[in-house]
Image 1: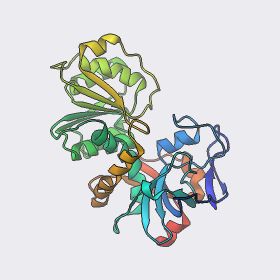
Image 2 (image 1 turned 135 degrees about the vertical axis):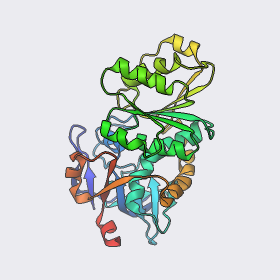
Image 3 (image 1 turned 120 degrees about the horizontal axis):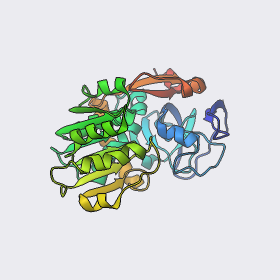
Image 4 (image 1 turned 90 degrees about the vertical axis):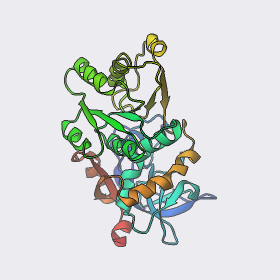
Length: 325
Protein backbone atom coordinates (compact mmCIF):
# COMPACT_ATOMS: atom_id res chain seq x y z
CA UNK A 1 0.00 0.00 0.00
CA UNK A 2 0.97 3.68 -0.18
CA UNK A 3 1.19 5.85 2.91
CA UNK A 4 2.65 8.99 4.42
CA UNK A 5 5.82 7.75 6.10
CA UNK A 6 7.95 9.53 8.71
CA UNK A 7 11.54 8.29 8.78
CA UNK A 8 13.04 11.29 10.59
CA UNK A 9 11.45 13.71 13.05
CA UNK A 10 13.44 16.49 11.39
CA UNK A 11 11.69 16.04 8.02
CA UNK A 12 8.04 15.95 6.89
CA UNK A 13 6.49 12.63 5.88
CA UNK A 14 6.97 11.32 2.35
CA UNK A 15 4.48 9.50 0.16
CA UNK A 16 5.86 6.04 -0.45
CA UNK A 17 5.09 2.35 -0.42
CA UNK A 18 4.82 0.73 2.99
CA UNK A 19 4.03 -2.75 4.22
CA UNK A 20 0.29 -3.29 4.68
CA UNK A 21 -0.38 -3.92 8.39
CA UNK A 22 -1.73 -7.29 9.43
CA UNK A 23 -4.75 -7.40 11.75
CA UNK A 24 -4.29 -8.95 15.17
CA UNK A 25 -7.14 -10.58 17.03
CA UNK A 26 -10.00 -8.12 17.38
CA UNK A 27 -8.72 -5.82 14.62
CA UNK A 28 -10.05 -5.19 11.11
CA UNK A 29 -8.12 -3.96 8.07
CA UNK A 30 -10.10 -1.13 6.47
CA UNK A 31 -9.76 0.91 3.31
CA UNK A 32 -9.18 4.52 4.31
CA UNK A 33 -11.35 7.18 2.70
CA UNK A 34 -10.42 10.43 4.43
CA UNK A 35 -7.92 11.53 7.10
CA UNK A 36 -7.70 14.97 8.69
CA UNK A 37 -4.34 16.74 8.83
CA UNK A 38 -4.75 17.94 12.42
CA UNK A 39 -2.17 19.69 14.63
CA UNK A 40 -2.20 16.48 16.68
CA UNK A 41 -1.06 14.63 13.55
CA UNK A 42 1.73 17.11 12.92
CA UNK A 43 3.03 16.91 16.49
CA UNK A 44 3.02 13.12 16.28
CA UNK A 45 4.94 13.28 13.01
CA UNK A 46 7.68 15.52 14.43
CA UNK A 47 7.91 13.61 17.72
CA UNK A 48 6.81 16.49 19.95
CA UNK A 49 3.44 15.13 21.14
CA UNK A 50 3.44 14.00 24.75
CA UNK A 51 2.43 10.47 23.72
CA UNK A 52 5.34 10.06 21.27
CA UNK A 53 7.59 7.09 22.03
CA UNK A 54 10.29 8.04 19.53
CA UNK A 55 9.95 4.94 17.35
CA UNK A 56 10.52 5.25 13.60
CA UNK A 57 9.45 4.78 10.89
CA UNK A 58 5.84 5.69 11.55
CA UNK A 59 2.67 6.50 9.66
CA UNK A 60 1.00 9.64 11.06
CA UNK A 61 -2.74 9.96 11.57
CA UNK A 62 -4.80 9.39 14.70
CA UNK A 63 -8.29 9.00 13.27
CA UNK A 64 -10.22 8.98 10.01
CA UNK A 65 -13.06 7.56 8.01
CA UNK A 66 -12.62 4.03 6.71
CA UNK A 67 -14.66 1.48 4.78
CA UNK A 68 -15.18 -1.92 6.36
CA UNK A 69 -14.95 -5.12 4.30
CA UNK A 70 -18.78 -5.26 4.23
CA UNK A 71 -18.95 -1.77 2.67
CA UNK A 72 -20.06 0.20 5.73
CA UNK A 73 -18.27 3.46 6.49
CA UNK A 74 -17.11 4.29 10.01
CA UNK A 75 -15.23 7.00 11.81
CA UNK A 76 -12.61 5.61 14.17
CA UNK A 77 -9.80 6.56 16.49
CA UNK A 78 -6.59 4.55 16.39
CA UNK A 79 -5.14 2.55 19.25
CA UNK A 80 -1.96 3.93 20.75
CA UNK A 81 0.39 1.34 19.27
CA UNK A 82 -1.34 0.88 15.90
CA UNK A 83 0.04 2.32 12.64
CA UNK A 84 -1.43 5.70 11.74
CA UNK A 85 -4.32 6.31 9.40
CA UNK A 86 -2.61 8.43 6.76
CA UNK A 87 -2.44 5.48 4.39
CA UNK A 88 -4.51 3.55 1.90
CA UNK A 89 -5.33 0.98 4.58
CA UNK A 90 -5.29 0.98 8.37
CA UNK A 91 -6.15 -1.20 11.36
CA UNK A 92 -9.37 -0.59 13.21
CA UNK A 93 -10.65 -1.80 16.57
CA UNK A 94 -14.47 -1.89 16.15
CA UNK A 95 -14.85 -0.79 19.78
CA UNK A 96 -13.22 2.52 18.87
CA UNK A 97 -15.46 3.30 15.89
CA UNK A 98 -18.88 4.73 15.14
CA UNK A 99 -20.86 4.27 11.93
CA UNK A 100 -21.39 7.17 9.57
CA UNK A 101 -25.02 8.09 8.87
CA UNK A 102 -26.00 7.45 5.26
CA UNK A 103 -26.02 11.16 4.45
CA UNK A 104 -22.71 11.98 6.16
CA UNK A 105 -19.81 13.26 4.06
CA UNK A 106 -16.58 11.37 4.94
CA UNK A 107 -14.44 14.43 4.22
CA UNK A 108 -16.47 16.67 6.53
CA UNK A 109 -16.40 14.06 9.28
CA UNK A 110 -12.64 13.57 8.93
CA UNK A 111 -12.10 17.33 9.06
CA UNK A 112 -14.33 18.04 12.03
CA UNK A 113 -14.31 15.16 14.51
CA UNK A 114 -10.81 15.62 15.91
CA UNK A 115 -10.91 19.39 16.49
CA UNK A 116 -14.51 19.21 17.70
CA UNK A 117 -13.82 16.30 20.01
CA UNK A 118 -11.45 18.29 22.23
CA UNK A 119 -14.01 20.80 23.51
CA UNK A 120 -16.98 18.41 23.23
CA UNK A 121 -15.29 15.90 25.53
CA UNK A 122 -13.95 18.61 27.83
CA UNK A 123 -17.36 20.17 28.44
CA UNK A 124 -19.19 16.86 28.73
CA UNK A 125 -16.63 14.73 30.57
CA UNK A 126 -14.26 16.94 32.57
CA UNK A 127 -16.77 19.27 34.23
CA UNK A 128 -20.50 19.43 34.90
CA UNK A 129 -21.23 22.13 32.36
CA UNK A 130 -24.67 23.68 32.70
CA UNK A 131 -26.81 25.59 30.27
CA UNK A 132 -26.58 29.31 30.92
CA UNK A 133 -22.94 29.31 31.97
CA UNK A 134 -20.31 31.44 30.22
CA UNK A 135 -17.13 30.31 28.48
CA UNK A 136 -13.83 31.84 27.41
CA UNK A 137 -12.09 30.11 24.50
CA UNK A 138 -8.41 31.02 24.70
CA UNK A 139 -6.86 30.33 21.31
CA UNK A 140 -10.17 30.58 19.49
CA UNK A 141 -8.68 31.35 16.08
CA UNK A 142 -7.37 27.82 15.53
CA UNK A 143 -9.60 25.15 14.02
CA UNK A 144 -10.22 23.48 17.38
CA UNK A 145 -10.90 26.88 18.94
CA UNK A 146 -13.44 27.75 16.26
CA UNK A 147 -15.21 24.46 16.90
CA UNK A 148 -15.10 25.13 20.65
CA UNK A 149 -16.96 28.42 20.17
CA UNK A 150 -19.71 26.63 18.28
CA UNK A 151 -19.87 23.71 20.68
CA UNK A 152 -20.04 25.88 23.79
CA UNK A 153 -23.01 27.75 22.33
CA UNK A 154 -24.65 24.52 21.18
CA UNK A 155 -24.32 23.00 24.66
CA UNK A 156 -26.08 25.99 26.17
CA UNK A 157 -23.48 28.65 26.95
CA UNK A 158 -25.20 31.97 27.42
CA UNK A 159 -22.03 33.88 26.61
CA UNK A 160 -18.86 32.88 24.73
CA UNK A 161 -15.77 35.08 24.75
CA UNK A 162 -13.40 34.20 21.89
CA UNK A 163 -9.77 35.32 22.20
CA UNK A 164 -6.99 34.91 19.64
CA UNK A 165 -4.33 36.63 17.58
CA UNK A 166 -5.36 36.13 13.94
CA UNK A 167 -7.54 39.12 12.91
CA UNK A 168 -9.07 37.40 9.87
CA UNK A 169 -10.11 34.39 11.90
CA UNK A 170 -11.42 36.57 14.72
CA UNK A 171 -13.80 38.17 12.24
CA UNK A 172 -15.38 34.77 11.59
CA UNK A 173 -16.15 33.98 15.20
CA UNK A 174 -19.18 36.18 15.78
CA UNK A 175 -20.98 34.32 13.00
CA UNK A 176 -20.05 31.05 14.72
CA UNK A 177 -21.55 31.99 18.07
CA UNK A 178 -19.07 34.22 19.89
CA UNK A 179 -20.78 36.97 21.87
CA UNK A 180 -17.49 38.81 22.51
CA UNK A 181 -14.21 38.82 20.58
CA UNK A 182 -10.86 39.86 22.09
CA UNK A 183 -7.66 40.31 20.10
CA UNK A 184 -4.49 39.06 21.78
CA UNK A 185 -2.26 40.72 19.18
CA UNK A 186 -0.12 43.74 19.97
CA UNK A 187 1.11 44.76 23.40
CA UNK A 188 0.75 41.70 25.69
CA UNK A 189 -0.09 43.66 28.84
CA UNK A 190 -2.78 45.67 27.08
CA UNK A 191 -4.22 42.54 25.48
CA UNK A 192 -4.36 40.82 28.87
CA UNK A 193 -6.18 43.82 30.30
CA UNK A 194 -8.80 43.72 27.55
CA UNK A 195 -9.22 39.99 28.09
CA UNK A 196 -9.66 40.45 31.83
CA UNK A 197 -12.34 43.08 31.31
CA UNK A 198 -14.26 40.94 28.81
CA UNK A 199 -13.98 37.56 30.52
CA UNK A 200 -13.50 38.21 34.23
CA UNK A 201 -16.71 36.46 35.29
CA UNK A 202 -16.79 33.46 32.95
CA UNK A 203 -17.43 30.05 34.48
CA UNK A 204 -15.17 28.01 32.20
CA UNK A 205 -11.97 28.59 30.22
CA UNK A 206 -11.12 26.28 27.34
CA UNK A 207 -7.41 26.85 26.85
CA UNK A 208 -5.61 25.89 23.64
CA UNK A 209 -2.57 28.15 24.16
CA UNK A 210 -0.95 27.70 27.59
CA UNK A 211 2.49 29.36 27.73
CA UNK A 212 2.75 33.15 28.01
CA UNK A 213 -0.88 33.96 27.01
CA UNK A 214 -2.21 31.78 29.83
CA UNK A 215 0.37 33.10 32.27
CA UNK A 216 -0.97 36.60 31.65
CA UNK A 217 -4.61 35.62 31.37
CA UNK A 218 -4.96 33.85 34.73
CA UNK A 219 -4.24 36.90 36.95
CA UNK A 220 -6.00 39.22 34.48
CA UNK A 221 -9.24 37.31 34.96
CA UNK A 222 -8.98 36.47 38.64
CA UNK A 223 -8.14 39.97 39.84
CA UNK A 224 -11.22 41.35 38.07
CA UNK A 225 -13.79 38.73 39.12
CA UNK A 226 -16.87 40.12 40.83
CA UNK A 227 -16.92 37.14 43.19
CA UNK A 228 -13.55 35.44 43.56
CA UNK A 229 -15.14 32.54 45.42
CA UNK A 230 -17.21 31.65 42.35
CA UNK A 231 -15.67 28.54 40.73
CA UNK A 232 -13.61 29.00 37.59
CA UNK A 233 -12.86 25.77 35.73
CA UNK A 234 -9.74 26.18 33.59
CA UNK A 235 -9.54 23.28 31.12
CA UNK A 236 -6.10 22.95 29.54
CA UNK A 237 -6.31 21.23 26.13
CA UNK A 238 -3.52 22.57 23.92
CA UNK A 239 -0.15 24.26 24.28
CA UNK A 240 0.37 26.16 21.05
CA UNK A 241 2.17 28.98 22.89
CA UNK A 242 4.40 26.82 25.07
CA UNK A 243 4.43 23.83 27.43
CA UNK A 244 4.92 25.68 30.75
CA UNK A 245 3.63 28.59 32.78
CA UNK A 246 4.67 30.28 36.01
CA UNK A 247 1.73 30.45 38.41
CA UNK A 248 2.07 32.49 41.62
CA UNK A 249 0.83 30.64 44.69
CA UNK A 250 -1.28 33.63 45.69
CA UNK A 251 -3.46 33.07 42.63
CA UNK A 252 -4.62 29.72 43.96
CA UNK A 253 -5.31 31.13 47.43
CA UNK A 254 -7.07 34.30 46.31
CA UNK A 255 -9.67 32.76 44.00
CA UNK A 256 -11.59 29.55 43.42
CA UNK A 257 -9.52 28.39 40.45
CA UNK A 258 -9.68 24.76 39.36
CA UNK A 259 -7.12 23.78 36.70
CA UNK A 260 -7.44 20.49 34.87
CA UNK A 261 -6.44 18.94 31.59
CA UNK A 262 -8.53 17.17 28.99
CA UNK A 263 -6.97 14.65 26.64
CA UNK A 264 -5.61 11.15 26.35
CA UNK A 265 -5.18 9.93 29.91
CA UNK A 266 -7.30 12.48 31.76
CA UNK A 267 -10.31 11.00 29.95
CA UNK A 268 -10.46 7.26 29.37
CA UNK A 269 -10.52 5.90 25.84
CA UNK A 270 -13.95 4.46 26.61
CA UNK A 271 -15.16 7.87 27.76
CA UNK A 272 -13.95 9.54 24.58
CA UNK A 273 -15.48 6.88 22.34
CA UNK A 274 -18.79 7.16 24.20
CA UNK A 275 -19.05 10.80 23.14
CA UNK A 276 -18.49 10.16 19.43
CA UNK A 277 -22.04 9.12 18.40
CA UNK A 278 -23.66 12.29 19.75
CA UNK A 279 -20.97 14.46 18.18
CA UNK A 280 -21.36 12.59 14.88
CA UNK A 281 -25.10 13.29 14.99
CA UNK A 282 -24.54 17.03 15.31
CA UNK A 283 -22.04 17.06 12.46
CA UNK A 284 -24.45 15.13 10.23
CA UNK A 285 -27.23 17.58 11.04
CA UNK A 286 -25.03 20.52 10.06
CA UNK A 287 -25.11 21.96 13.57
CA UNK A 288 -21.38 22.65 13.47
CA UNK A 289 -19.68 24.47 10.61
CA UNK A 290 -16.39 23.22 9.18
CA UNK A 291 -14.45 24.13 6.04
CA UNK A 292 -12.86 20.95 4.73
CA UNK A 293 -10.18 21.14 2.06
CA UNK A 294 -9.75 17.71 0.39
CA UNK A 295 -6.41 16.79 -1.12
CA UNK A 296 -5.33 13.42 -2.57
CA UNK A 297 -3.10 11.33 -0.33
CA UNK A 298 -0.66 11.12 -3.24
CA UNK A 299 -0.19 14.90 -2.90
CA UNK A 300 0.35 14.80 0.86
CA UNK A 301 3.89 16.20 0.71
CA UNK A 302 2.59 19.39 -0.91
CA UNK A 303 -0.50 19.50 1.31
CA UNK A 304 1.63 19.15 4.45
CA UNK A 305 3.26 22.55 3.95
CA UNK A 306 0.70 24.43 1.81
CA UNK A 307 -0.97 27.46 3.44
CA UNK A 308 -4.72 27.35 4.08
CA UNK A 309 -7.41 29.97 4.36
CA UNK A 310 -8.79 30.88 7.80
CA UNK A 311 -10.93 28.06 9.15
CA UNK A 312 -9.89 25.45 6.60
CA UNK A 313 -8.80 21.94 7.58
CA UNK A 314 -6.86 19.83 5.07
CA UNK A 315 -8.24 16.33 4.59
CA UNK A 316 -6.23 13.72 2.70
CA UNK A 317 -8.38 11.44 0.57
CA UNK A 318 -7.57 8.10 -1.03
CA UNK A 319 -8.47 6.47 -4.32
CA UNK A 320 -11.10 4.49 -2.39
CA UNK A 321 -12.86 7.77 -1.57
CA UNK A 322 -12.53 8.99 -5.16
CA UNK A 323 -14.11 5.78 -6.49
CA UNK A 324 -16.90 6.05 -3.91
CA UNK A 325 -17.86 9.51 -5.18
